[in-house]
Length: 425
Image (cartoon, rainbow, N blue to C red; front, side, top):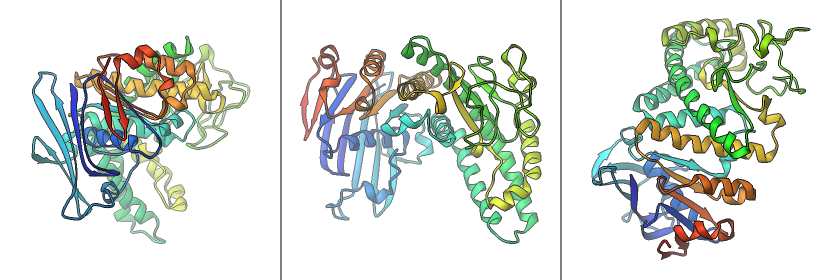
């Protein structure tokens, strides 16, 4: 699958721009504030139906344009069979509409049609940032791969909103709250089970890629669900589980990096060390993660935490609060990883997205890299460029061509902004 053309009309700072792509590697170069990221955003909007900038739809329309001249972006691409197709987004009066081959489509209908992964400077926080970043990484990928996943996530979020509205009341109707608790548990169980399979696939691939990037360091991920004290490890069984003391707690593991077993309330047990590095009954050997089983666990956990949720005025139990920790050589990457290691982990996760997208869709995804070369050291830039090949159509924005070796520049198509095109080679 290859994107052949991108056409912009009244999008961001571009009044009209028509681009043709002649090489699998496209380097977009120019000074700051000339619209390089806007091109990446346009490609993301058409492939993922969302923007990493999270703008309002009116913000995408060029501010000098008039209402009678709406914003429109169109991406022309060839299917693996060679058949041409195109996806368009039209924005007028603050409303948006997607089209596929000139037929109006909902965003969910377009999910995964043109598989793509985006790597922006914000993604460098994946290893050291809050757990929500890692949850969103998995759920965003799932929504692009599956309409079912996207629908479950959307319905779960809506149910959470309704429950939280009730929890903010001084005296909520308990019968109504119970009905929403059941809805949250049912949808949460489905979201969790769908997420768990993708979690293992993504982080297992990331571990392999990170090993190559780092010269043999080991990356593992620990998933702590709010409905259970079990730790779910990816790659399977590769690391012992670390203590779980709350989603955002700075004390959630001993800062000497030791592994300890847990009491039922999640606190480390004194003078006890795990045999063979695995705390008993805490890792995934005993998990039973069917949707029905998880729903039962969620219902029980929500009931047990009623007073906590009432005091907090928000839902505390469910996959929206599950925690994912990343470990490098068995130590928490957030606390013990160097900046270079953390950025290497982020890079491995985004490259793993490409692998998973290809495994699931059967099509080679495109990779969108927005100004990340300046954020990586020379060694990781070199490793990244080695990972790029002609099978993956890649778009990179940069202000400095010195980040690229001559061999890379010779095989790339350069797009300079303000726009002029140079053919590859």
